Length: 391
Image 1 (cartoon, rainbow, N blue to C red):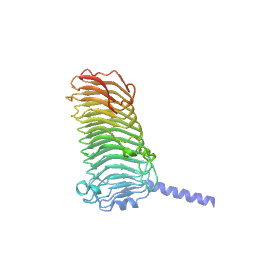
Image 2: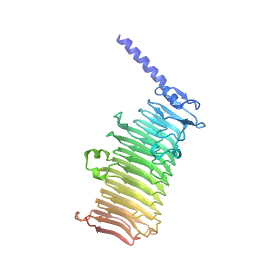
Image 3: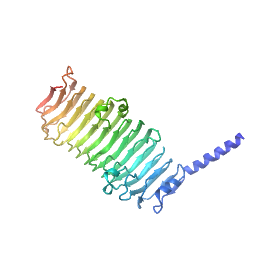
Image 4: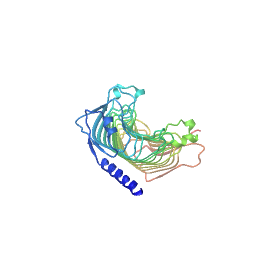
């Protein structure tokens, strides 16, 4: 009896393995969702970029599948509907384009083109056009009570996406962690930008981002009102261990921004940032243990200061260069921050800043909360200004 059970198990495993290697050609004349639903677990579905699926419902991917080389668009006027939803671990999407319908749906009916509700995914070489919300939204679903752990997003392009090209979120007390994002380009996202990390994520790695004509390049965010920041339930929206590397942009409102509350966001690093024609290159607020290295700012617009940190603790800014600027305001400013280090910052001779660094200190704080070293502020009218403000 035992040997029979074992033989049956072997046969089942072989059938799964054979199905897992199956390659299925997608037919543009048939319903996309039906073809995905009928595919065996582990199969590879291959389409053609020469034809476009028009979707009247979302394509639900509820099993491990590999889908590549396809183009799909939402039907005009179809609201509250994603193009695709990943609800199983082990889904892989390659070489595809998703087209939204933001010009034909209301603000209330907007939805992301691709929603990812499970971990262990790979999304590679994807283009997102005209989305009414995000291009990709990674977020847990409360009904499953399953956190999202692990996932790779690479070589993503967004054109005219209403909000973020890639948004990674925790929600419902469920953690999103260990997501690797490499290569995102965003163009003309007036409300948001290329990448957002929000609402309690951990160990998110973002690198090689480029953005033009957007509100920002990258953002860290929560959705807690300041008066609720002390609540225990609010602390779960604090983001920790976030890494940004090689972030570039031009013609932005912000290069880097933190839209955050004082709930303990911590261990955030930014390395190699380049921004030009931005109103404000960096705005940090309510952040702890922040490191920013190798920042280059060129031709900043009229906003002042160019780099601003407010109510942050343990912030280190080093190896920054400001150049080609007629800006007569302040290069770097901090407001009510503690344990600051500003070092190896250079204002090139073609800048005209009024001050290199301004530090505003509350009267309750004794001493000076900033250490400076190896800065070259000679091009500014004033080097470092320490000012105490009224409580």
